[in-house]
Length: 233
Image (cartoon, rainbow, N blue to C red; front, side, top):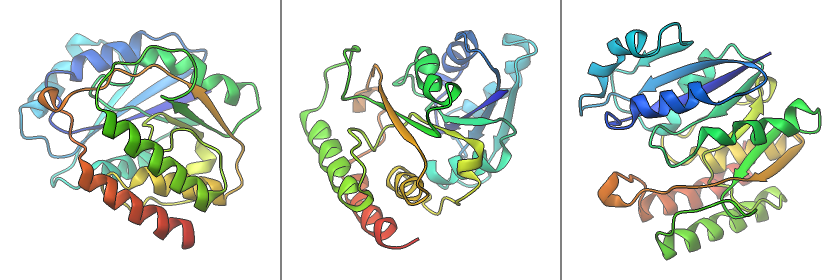
C-alpha cells in the first residue's frame, strides 16, 4: 500500500527542505510518494528543486511546476490528477501542520473504519500555538455553516489535513482554484456518503509577519463556496 502526499507550494523557499525532511522522517506502515506542485513561485523556491536529489537521495519526490499562479485549489487539483497511491493526504509546505500526525490520521483508514479522515485543530489535547482570536471565530463560523449544508458534525472543516482513499477523489473534481477547496471537498465528500472520521491534531500557526497568506476575503469566498457546493454539484 502507498500514501500519496500532495504538497502545494507557493513561495516557500524558507521551509521547503524542512517540510520534506519532516515528511520523509515520519514512520508510517505504508510506502509513500511526495508530489510537490509549485504554483509559479517567485521567491527563489524554484531554484531549490534541483537540490532535492542531493539533499534527499532516493526520496520518492516528484515536482510539478505550474507556469501560471492559479491558487492552492488548482495546485491540489493537479496533485490529485497525478497520484498513484492507495490513499491521498494534503500537506501544506509552511510547517503549520506536523507530519508526525500521519500515523494518527491514517489509523482509522488502515483499520478499515473510515474512507476519509479530517485532522481537527479544535478537538483533543494536542498543543496549539496561540494566535488570532478572529481567525478562530471565523473557522468555527465557517465549519458550522458548512455543517448546516452537509449535515456533518465536523469541528474543523477548514483544516489542511484531509486524508482519503484514492477512490474517493476519483469520484469528484475540484473546481475551486483557491482556498474554496476546503468547503468544496467537504461538500462533495458528504454527498458521496463516505465514512468520515475526525482526529485531534497539533497546530503551529504562522503570523502574517511569518508569511501567512489567508485573509478575511478568503473567508467570504469560503462562505459563498459553502452555499454553492452545498446546494449544487
